[in-house]
Image (cartoon, rainbow, N blue to C red; front, side, top):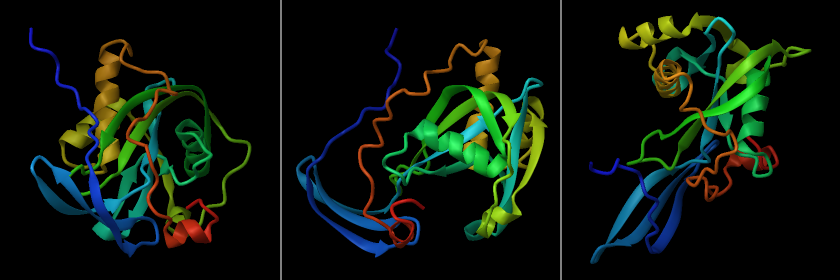
Length: 220
């Protein structure tokens, strides 16, 4: 039997690197690097990466939040999520904070559902999705601002979420990945779930500080 394919981290020699744009949340970086017998230059979105939370209640309903996203001009349905822009905060700690801040929820049980690259040809971003169960409301509602001030929280059964994805009604990539992975994991008796503290090798560095991160003292 042929071995299963597995992504492998690769270290190449970086000849030069330049930040082309210091963005409010992330930067545009240009790297020249050696690959094979030659050199290549590639520009990409230099991103801190992020976490998202699929919060599932005892009736297999997941919490979705609706939020305006300006680049696509949509109020799309998403998972509670946030940037990993606080180096002293673990991904799990970030996930717990974001679940409280965006959905006013806390959870007793946490598992790693999956990791994925959002756009490996043009961005350094990876997203880790946690499965949170044993849910309870937080003692107080979080005061939200900016786009988050419009957040609406709705509950949808996991099966209905799968149907909505296949019907083309949901488009957020973290929702698509998380819902389909959770549905398959449930079919397998949740045996695919991993320890929430599993190392995240893609998170080996942070991009250069963005104006937003600098203004917020290191956290966006």
